[in-house]
Image (spheres, helix red, strand yellow):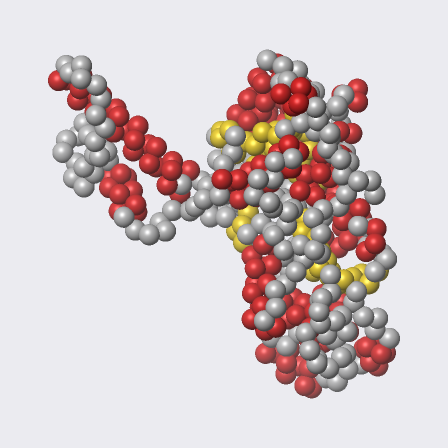
Length: 440
């Protein structure tokens, strides 16, 4: 693999008069909601296509490439290829040192085809391991009784005798039975890959772990975001610390907001550039400030060589990223309000509205008094409505009560890296903004 090199001249970075744009687009909460496209999605994607602005769908999902490409092609009636899609585990294709290792994979059934697509040739799933060692899954009370009455088969005994130890763990996505997967993963980590062994001490370092997608939540069809793979990983990390008194360390973390995913997506989007033109401006559209926006800002700082906070690509990773060629100009992050980010639960949004209403109320009062002394901003009394013309309604009373309580709102922008360059209502607004900028 080649060394990561980012070479810019000061003139190239500062010259924004001419650029070739490329776009990274998140899927859930931006293009789709609960698997169905928003009303504006088709027009937005078609607009990018007709304006010949290359784009790549960059999702933290763990879809098989063919399934994702076929689905998007069907929805938008456009000839998408594998180059148009980057899923969280896509950079695993570059982890050649692990492709021939015996790996244990944690995922759901619809991700099984993805495992070999990523290059892993010798793998075992949690479910397959439990079939060989049925005593590992001991949560279900009915299964306990069944195991007591049914001894191991001759085939299971043979498989246990011939079992080859696990050499690495790949966490592709949240499983269905969390309790079983959490138990089995701890077993494998604490026995250094061989569940036949009697536990003596915690191995150090533990088996290498490759984890994809640390999204705590994602936007589905329900009103509130759903738990994602990040929630499962939080449980695994907490249990490992509780049981072993040691921190769980990831060999690689993939997916947004980690740099390895943006580096990989940047290579993909260059393949889609018109006439091989060098893409030197990237717009990254997402719905999650803590994932999409933070990742975009980290990637921008990395390209510019700033990295002011001294961060690496992961919080607890043994390696920073796969070494890939990248050579792009700065990034612009665009946050949409159709997914995880909800302005109605954002305190800053409400305070801005209160401020604007207060300005308007004072402006009306000043005009009635015919005063030219200037506007004095006062804190409105929102406990009692004085008249039907009062701009502060019942919702504002509820807002004041929420503001008086601790932690009533979600802290979307507590970290400066979560602050987007642009905030718009939806994907179509984002696309119109990009097209407008590209024509200037």
